[in-house]
Image 1 (cartoon, rainbow, N blue to C red):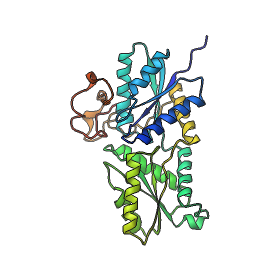
Image 2 (cartoon, rainbow, N blue to C red):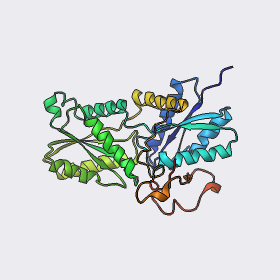
Image 3 (cartoon, one colour):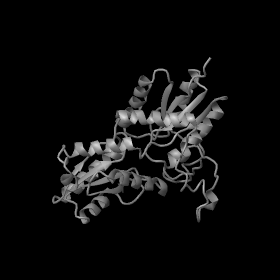
Length: 312
């Protein structure tokens, strides 16, 4: 008898936006339909139902013992580095006999860069087809923003990779929360660089509170700067490339072929001034929908939810 493959557990950020949360749940359902022989479930770290623990419990009830968890996140920040592994270790204590491997965040994968390029073309209405036209377009890639410098650097890496070989005037970077430059400052920078046509490109998988904020701030800036043509692009969305990429991350996790971005991580390497962080234990993230007895006092000692203790 062959051993069944590990179940696929999708871990999401969570959002206060109902449409964004539903987009995640619909994506998980779509993955399950595409892979009918694979048990698939998904849950959130915070803010929206179902919590990750419920997804694990659902799979355990279906007889699953082995999991491969994939973070449905573009960037490895606090959630991917700390909260999800901590949540998984907590589930391991709750459900005796389960085991799991853990996949990498999604970006900046070449197939996602091609979706971003498509979003830019759509925002330009197909008007930047020739190299000469592309050379007049400046892109502002807007990431979520984190208190983790490594996570913010990953957005810069995505921006550079998007720029390479595509012929845009430039790809600048901004963040919608927790990190500078913010969206208006990013647009100011584009204008100072002489940009006449700017496309603001949200580096987000699905709609939500933060992508809405990016669009609103873009429109406000554009109204105040009529001399610059500014357009807003759409989020990545549940594209076939994203469905395929999640499966690629699943296969990597199952094979144990993990290459997490650890070379600049303060929890793995003794970086100057951060030596006390190496090997720190996991702190589980408290999900508001979880049962109360796992609350570990306060909310990460008063940090914003992106600034908590992580370890590998």
